[in-house]
Image (cartoon, rainbow, N blue to C red; front, top):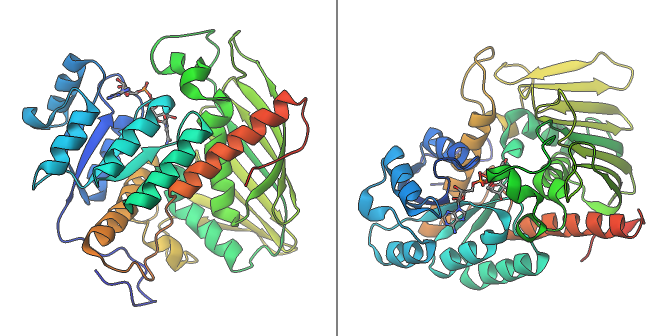
Length: 394
Ligand SMILES: NC(=O)c1ccc[n+]([C@@H]2O[C@H](COP(=O)([O-])OP(=O)(O)OC[C@H]3O[C@@H](n4cnc5c(N)ncnc54)[C@H](O)[C@@H]3O)[C@@H](O)[C@H]2O)c1
């Protein structure tokens, strides 16, 4: 691999597929299958091992579904970490797709075994565990990548590149919403049930589950962070122990105000992650449900729609995330594949000692995972204090 040519922003071929394991992701789980298809589609990974479920019969059946050999299907992640680390052909990275309160122990076990970690958000259920993971990652030098798939859409990178080039000028305000409609049941089994249990999900179900995505998207596109929040939270769907809706005022690090609207109790909204960014020279709009289009409105000039796959106007920073011509849809599966392609380059370069240099990777590491937890804490603190402006810690 070489990352020295500035004009070549494509990802280099790795020469072989990296060996990947999974914890979680078995039959009945939600997000594991998305990771799996992204890893396969990226062509950078072969899934060869897994502790896919807490239920041994489910773990074994799920391993068969994914063509994992029976002797590499484990009933316990600790056994998997130790066994795989000792094998000459052991896994080089693990994807962790389990509920939030299990992330810290599982990720620490693999980091300590020298196995690179790909960890779903939010990083943990409590911030102290996230700090511990940051320490373990630093001490081991093994990579930890957080998975925020929306930031791997080509048009999100296009927006980021346009903002970095000053196309909309200084950012003056932002509006982000993430609206869904599945949370009208009071309490359900499976992957909805644990999202209402603070001991599993953490201090705020709604901010941890979808607020972290919105916060991350805002940061990825604008390069700005959130300095302070003022949060109000509500139950708008069925009666339940945790709010399903949040209205959050933001103050960004450049002083600009912002608004974040989160809910999974808004009928007719399916996966409505939408962002509008207003600068002093123009504005940008992007919607996760139509991810191939990006709207740029320069001040007092004709607006432009950038289209993924079109030749004109797409910047090099977005090019390496585009695989098909315009009109041939690329969507969330492709964003996951882009994430796994970038993570593959990171893991391969760490393992081979190659300097990443100019590689066009936009990945989130351990510090970003901890920052996500800090954001959740600030929102929860603000709400508990009656909606007081609250600074994000550290
Ligand atoms: N990045 C995204 O877009 C995205 C989307 C959805 C969920 N998530 C995150 O992914 C994680 C999982 O969410 P989900 O909805 O898929 O949960 P889920 O409940 O549907 O699935 C979790 C799976 O993990 C397994 N599991 C739990 N503990 C385990 C252990 N110790 N060993 C092996 N398997 C174990 C369960 O058996 C289950 O199969 C959560 O942290 C969630 O926040 C991220």
